[in-house]
Length: 336
Image (spheres, rainbow, N blue to C red):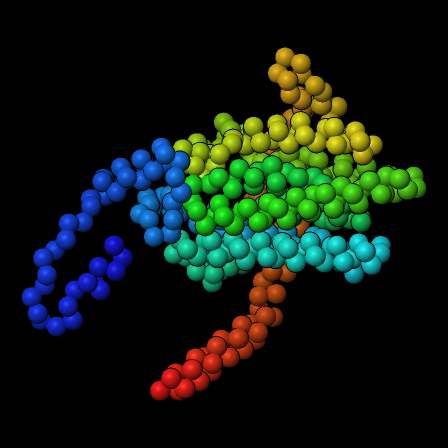
């Protein structure tokens, strides 16, 4: 429907008989039926404006999180304790950059541009995951990010492989496979440290203490305070609620912590036989919203680093475009 003008003649010739165009209500009914059948929506399919805008916001912010998420761990590449750990960390940070590219490409199929998305990030209009606005103080933080942060991300992202929007769902399949490796790598790194000196064990426990509650907040506010979640679930963009994802993460992580030999910093954390789930203490949502709104310990630093990287890389983008134009001109000349 976006290229109807191409079907019309260029000159004053009589126009062909107009074809019937489905009404918005008919298109909406077709879309709703597709949602009921749990079918995929593809880029050329009709979709409601709000569905499109919701996807652009979610996928672009997911992409921003992958790109900004390179920074806390990238800070430790030059300080990794061994060549093995350095090689693993370089590969992981590179993966995160690739995830961002997959997701920007998926968002572009919805009609937005890479420049628009990055402008929104650099001007502070678009958000990214609040978890990346905290510092990585020790090497143990790198392992805990792999175990807990990536573990929480996997719990949240595996259902996205069944997202109703095809390009997003397909991108998530590869991303989740790589994130699973990242989690295992982080956990293995911590296991090694927990077999080391008392100072190393204390370093791991300190990192767990600092990151645990922040990871629980990663799943977003409680369902009662998340008004957009219900619509996203009806559309099949989001499959599982914030609270259910958070509960699944806690239940999966408690036995992992026991094997590791660390204590999760929640005195109220205990198994509830009646619910068949773990109970946990209250999350500090004031800190969460403060960080989301730009007042976290590293918000300004993270954004400034991304803007500087974009500006410093302008010459590379310009050179690539100039080369592409030169190649195109050469191809046209040879074709002539």
